Structure formats: structure tokens, C-alpha cells
Length: 468
Image (cartoon, rainbow, N blue to C red):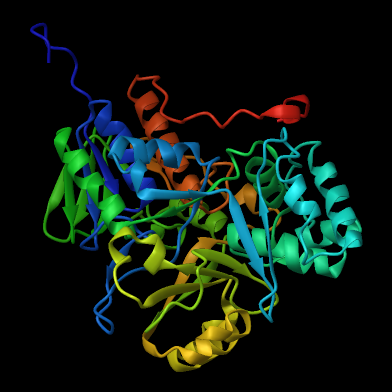
């Protein structure tokens, strides 16, 4: 405060320590707002977290998370936290079919949107007819991201004359992992946005980044960041209810009550009802959210006595498993020794929810051997399966209308989360965008018009000629 007594910033409770809550807390704390972040678990990160698995003694991520060069707000958060160096960037993605034949797509010096054209033309796992159809569909996407409609992306692809091989070996591997949903249940808007922003706009936008440290190690530093700016982080502190008056908010935590000026709920949409006051306003909000659904992801963690592939990651085609990440090569602290630690990913994993651990591991071993025959000579030392049942919200056609803005019927409560109206599907970038947008809305309500959201990457090359 100055000697004249500048007006103090209002105090803010942030409920939920996932990426949206972290984003809001860090932005507001950096701007001088006294924040108190409540998280019921003993660590930050939400669905992007890691922990020591009791059955293996290994630190595992709850699910493999990747980022792209177009994730400007997530990268801004990494820069704030000083963890930008904990990402390894790749410009090449390898695709493997059963039997082991592989090919890759990577960027070149050609101007966007043709920066991947040379490797695409040489891609061995698609026919000339497949590629011609894909090219026609990509050209159609240059016209811009369409408005949300009742059409699903699989229907759009078929309307654009895509072959089944093109759908299975090009569109599906990219989009099911990006949107965590099957193509026949995905919005054309979200699918088009992924391809335009990540793969057509520029080579930089399409770079794939993989964290080189456990996720809780990356996001855990947010607690120190917030505390260093006068905020408080309360772990193992669940919130049971929020009550409002004209001038304050009462946050009822498990141990005691807290009285602050504003509150941000960064809870998942399906958990929001437990903290809201009863009444018509809450019922109306819940009625809108009842149209949203969640989709699961399954991560299969396997430790072998030897290396089974020199690849650090690959997209696996035509089977249940969609991606392989060799964590023993990616995680900086796991590079010692001769063994190999793989994480296999099944996005939109509805089929595995009812399967038991042993059944999933048996399926994974069988499919993995089709891509990497050396698995048959390796010894599986230990394994575990992690099912994230509510991994993302479903990017269904017309779901955009049910996503909420930060403001609520209660002037002192704001909403955040990747499920809110961010313009992005359910991703780490979408969550941080939500956090920054909510911080902006709260600041504006307190008479502060500052901005936190980071602009998108500008289009490069010939993409400057097309609508953004």
C-alpha cells in the first residue's frame, strides 16, 4: 500500500486445484489479489497429476498429457511457474500399423499450410486415393471453423468423400486423442478447430510437447508461486458449501469457515452441485449442465526388463491402444538402466471401463507385440492400469450451448474449468484459458479491466490469406 492508502484488492477463494484453479490463482496472485486456493487432495494438478502408485512403488501420471505449440496460455503458465524447460518438443509423429510397418509425418521449411506436405505425400500407410480425399477435406477446413451444429464429424468426413482407411489411419488417431471421443460423437466445430489451429496454421503450432517430469512435480510449484505472492494454498481441504451475502462469501471448508470477498469454483461440472446454495437459480444452472457428459481415458503402465523400441512415442493404428509413450526415455529422471517403462493410452475408453486389470494388461501385451515383436522376448516386471472415468467432457455436437460463462446468478461467485465457455475442447490449454478468463471476469467485477488471456499464435505462410 502507498502512504495515501491505495485501495486493497479484494480477497478471493478458489475452489479446486486443477489447471483452471491454478491458472486463476496464479494470474490473480500475480496481479496483487490475496487468493486462498482450496484443494481436497494432497497435491495440485487435478486430472493432470501424478502420485506414487501403491502397487508398484513408482510415480505415475494419472494419464499421459501432451501439449501443442498452439497452447499459448498453457505455455504462459509454464513460463510463470518456471517449468517451461520440463517439456520435450517433437516435430515428427511416427505411426505404426500391426505387423510393425511404420511411417511418419513431420514439418518442413515449406510455408503453412504445406509445412507437412512432403512427409504426408510419402506416408506409406495411406494410398494415393486416401491422401487425395484427405487433401480435399483439409482444403475445406481452410474456409474457417464452422459454427456448432447437429452434424457429427464422422458424418462430415463421409460427406467429404473420405475413405475408411483415411478415417481410421489419419483423422481418428489425431482427433480421438485430441478430443477424447469417437468421431461419430464429436462436434464438427471442435474437430475443425483442432486441425486448423494445430496442423494447418503453422509448423510451430503443430509441435508436440511431452512433459519430462511427473505432472505433480510440474504443477506442484504453483503452490510456492502463489504463496510467494501473499496467497495461501490449503491442501487436503475440501469445500462443503459456499454461502453469499451482499458484501462477502463464506466458504465452508472441512476444518473451518473462511470469509472472503469473492469465490471461484474450479470444480468439474458434475461436482458443482455440492457447493451451490439451493434454490431456483441453482436448479436452472444444473439443468443446463445436465446436458454435458464425461468421457473416460485409460492409461496402461508397463515395466519391462529391456528396451523394446528405440522410439520415444508413436501412434498405434487399427487396435484398441492408440498411443505409446516410452516414459523411461522421456522422463528425465528415468533414463538410467536397461529396462523400459511404457505408458499406453486408450482414449475414449468406454470399452475398458468394465474390464478388470488383468484383462486389460493381457490385451495390451497382445496388441503391443503386434507393433513391437521384441515384446515377446521381454519380461514384464510390473504393470498397472489407471482409469480416469471423468477425464474430459464430451465434445458432442451442439454441446457448446451448454457450456457456461464465468459469471453466475450470484455476483460474488464465478465459474472456471475446461468445461466452461473457453472456445476450446477439454484440454490442458482449455483449462488454463478458463482460469485466465475467470480471473479477468472477477477482476472486471472489482473495477479492474486487466487482461490475462494470451492471444492465439498468428497464422504463418499462406494461412495468413484465409479466415482465422
